[in-house]
Image 1 (cartoon, rainbow, N blue to C red):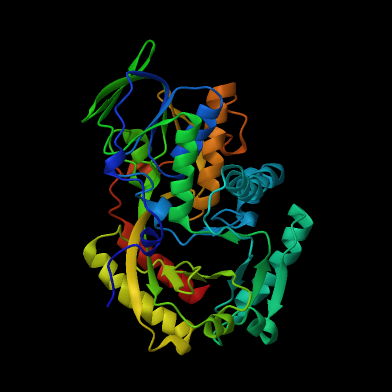
Image 2 (cartoon, rainbow, N blue to C red; image 1 turned 90 degrees about the horizontal axis):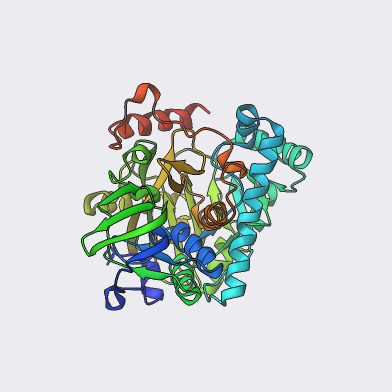
Amino acid sequence: MIKERIYWHDTVEMRSDKNIAPLPGRVDAAVIGGGYTGLSAARTLARNGARVVVLESETLGWGASSRNGGMVLPGLKPAMSTVIKRYGLDAAKKLYQCSLESIDAVERIIREENIDCGFKRSGHLLVATKPKHLDTMARNVEFMEKEFNHSVRLVPQNELHNEVGSQIYYGGIVDEVSGGLNPAQYVTGLAHAAEKAGAVLCVRAQVTGIERQANGFIVATPRGTLVADKVIVATSGYTGNVTPKLQRKIIPLGSFIIATEPLPKELVDELSPKNRMIYDFRHFLNYYRFSADNRLIFGGRAEFFAESPSSIRKSAMILQREMVKVYPQLKNVQVEYAWGGTIDFTFDMMPHIGQVDGVHYALGYAGHGVAMATYLGEAIAGTILHGNSREHPFAAFSFPGAPLGLYNGRPWFLPFAGLWYRILDLIE
């Protein structure tokens, strides 16, 4: 029987209401959001002697930080050729290097804090769902080596059985730098690390107002108010009307995942011989990998809506059909878990850090949040500590809103966007 429940949450004791800390009266920095970005920023600030409070509306790691597929990937949502056209080759090289450093940042923090989350650099496999995708991949292998000095390997169709036990693909690309982890264990470990460094972690403390004063900000919550010299918004897909200028730049989008019952080890070895992080070359993509206890974790953009009981149930059926298309071997396997989370897209599909009305932010990970949110959390803390807010590569370009300003934070256009992407998947 399918549990409408997050599998990862059953593998760790999540930080909960039983550890509600009192709000401090005054801090150097108030961080809004208790996910990867906020906890990474809080850890960095506290380790450098700052008085920090993390204000989380639910429980620590409640959102996408404990609901994602646990893939730690390089690159950005747009193709690097697109990034070059927008920002130039030099800027694109810096941005790509940041994506590689973001994986290093996750690995370093896990090592420094001794976080037991199963992190391993097992590499990722991008698979071609059409023959012409493989031609594009072949060009990308040469392009990445030439322009970014980054080696990836093309896998032709006749060798793909060494990477994935599926017959539906036409080849793929392997990148060995990627990794995987248990996201709930990681975010819980990050919370412990921030607290150990001296940060105060406050759950059930939704921020209801931010008022700028001459000497900082007054931050209001249902549990009281506090004064902060600096404020960091780290709310990703859950960015709300307390920061309306940022809300109008973020598109919350649902991503859904199912998890099977534990599978026999010999079957796991057949389906994923090298335990890669696997995803396909589509807009409505599927992504999948195996958990430590041999469950297939299978996710995708099944619905272009935020998570809800109805969207989770509908998405679970879609994902199970997709899973069986990929792996007919799993036709009779029980799906035990189904859940959703909300990720944050921007209108240029790029991450952004900066300031608006004096408030710092790091947002817009577009499905690359495990590594990039950790990395940009540290980066935004660095801008506060060292005052170099415009020097970071992700702060060097504008943060666009909707064309003609036709967006108030409620994504009325998602059904149309979903239809458009389905059409692109058919013709590209």
